[in-house]
Every structure is written in structure tokens, then in C-alpha cells.
Amino acid sequence: MAIHYDSHSVKAHYMLGLALLDRQELAGGIKALEKSLELGRGAHPASYMVEEIWQELSKAKYIEWEGLSKMRSSQLHKLNATCKEALKSYNSLDNPTGDMSEEHLNELDEVFKKAAKADTPTEVPDHLCCKITLDIFRDPVITPSGITYERAVILDHLNRVGKFDPVTREPLEPFQLISNLAVKEAVYVFLKEHGWAYKIR
Image 1: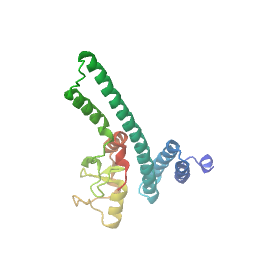
Image 2: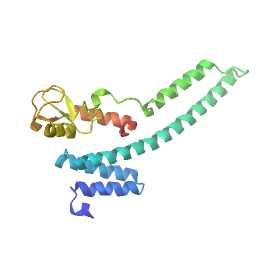
Image 3: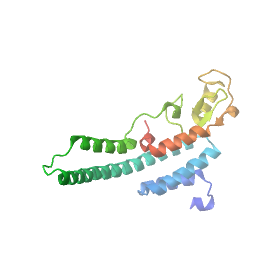
Image 4: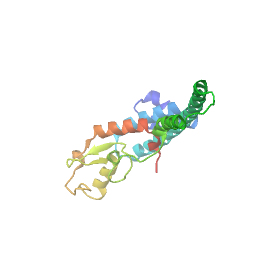
């Protein structure tokens, strides 16, 4: 009901997302959490609420990836078995003794290994990770020295430790931080193709 009164309420979208996830409505829950995150980043980019929203969204996205990954794996396994059967049938027409070339089977297995590679967890590339947390970026910002950090983390550093870049030690003020849209887009593309990277350490 709160969303009807204030469609820009971060908390209302967040609570709706959690409620939908609790009801096993993954797609709707993810959509509401994404809206909440978008609104939260606009209002208070370094707030604890944005971090909490990201945590819940990451969990939901990982669950979504896990389900899709299992489905794709099952489909690939069935398709591999079907292809092997078709290859056997084809070979039996050419070769009545029924000897199937080991080379053909290896090539077929290699094709299916490559198809499954996107669902195989590896390491997140360094250029997509914050230099301080070593986690994948959520809201990357770039400093005048050209180093990209996670917004909430660098703002926390500037408030608690001092007004300087933690890597270069050059003076740094919060107003000098600029959203790194190129890295943000690269992270978006990477996460879209590699849902396993949503898993939180």
C-alpha cells in the first residue's frame, strides 16, 4: 500500500521485494529490489540501506542463476546424449560394424564443455573489483588519479580515515568522485553472463 502513496519510497520497494521473495516470486522480488536499489542510490548512495538492498538482491540473483544453471545443465546433458545416439545411428549406416570414432565423441564432448563454461564459476576479473574490498563493484566511482573504488567504501574511508586516496595518498574530497559508468556497464554485462558472481563471500 505504501508504494501507492509514494512510488519513490526506497523502503516500500525493498519490503515488497522481500515479501515477494518470501512467497517464492523470484522475478517480481528481483524487480522490486532493483527499483529499491535504484531509488536508494539516488537518494543516499552510501547509506546502510543501499548495502542491505544489494545483499538481498545479490542473494536473489544468485538463486535465480542457480535455478537457470541447473536447467541449462540438464538440457545440455540430454542434448549431449541425444547427439551421441544420433552419431551412433549415423555411423552404423556408414559402418555396419558399429565402431564409433573416439575422435568424434571427444569433439562432441568438447563442444558441450564449451557450452557449459559460462555457468562454471571462476574468478571475477580484477578490473571489475574494488581495490579496497576486492569485491565486485556495485556502484563504482573514479578519483582524479584514475583509480576506481566502490562508492560507499571510499566515502567511508574519506570520513573515517582522512581526505586522501588510499592507494595514491593524494588529497581527495567526496565531491571529486565521479560515477564510473564504463565500469558499471562492464559489471552489469559480466553479471548478466556470469550469474554465479552474485554469490556473496
